[in-house]
Amino acid sequence: MYLDLHTHSVSSDDSRANVEQYVKWIGVLRKKGHQIDGFVLTEHRKFDFDKDYSELGSENDVLILKGSELDTDLGHFLVYGVTEQLTQQVDFSDVDMDALKLIEIAENTGAVAIPAHPGRFGIGLTEFTGNGRDFSALRAAERFNGSNRPGEQERAEEFISQLGLRGTGGSDAHLVSAIGKCMTRFDGDIGSELDLVAQLKTGRFEPVWLDDTKQEQA
Image (cartoon, rainbow, N blue to C red; front, side):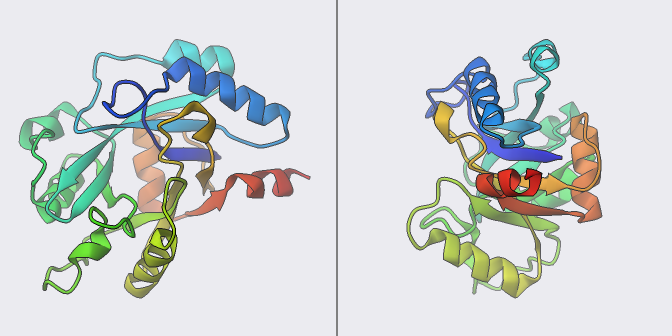
């Protein structure tokens, strides 16, 4: 399965795309021969418990899952498998939360937290290395990010390789046409947020660029 693990809709304060538009654009990309099975909405500093996209997804054969992107003292983190228990223990609006504590609580509540765009200047995890913090609890990090600026992709690649982490891929889409620019390919089937967490914990995945999906279909 090919999933874009990092997208933002108008529910995030800096995005201009709605979920229906993303779904329509995926249809356009599929007609061009690309494979996109679904995407995860990782809204900034929140989790939309009240939003249900299952009918929209089913009608269009697109898996639509939800997650969060949180601000921490070690940069931005993507959280998958968010539960009410997690939101009760972590203040999602806290822009300076303890990242290592977030990773621990996420694990204890059935979720996974990984660094978003670690090579991003100012807000990526690479900005905070060399401070003596122990990153051994990390399962993975976002290796491909479709919104990286020049130099940021290279920083992420080097950082992830040095730590020996598995890498994910996500477009970081804030505009409709950006969705699917890069994704994560999973060996196993995914149909829910629980499935996504389980697959992330297996380590059997890799980041891909959109063009890779077309080449592998041929």
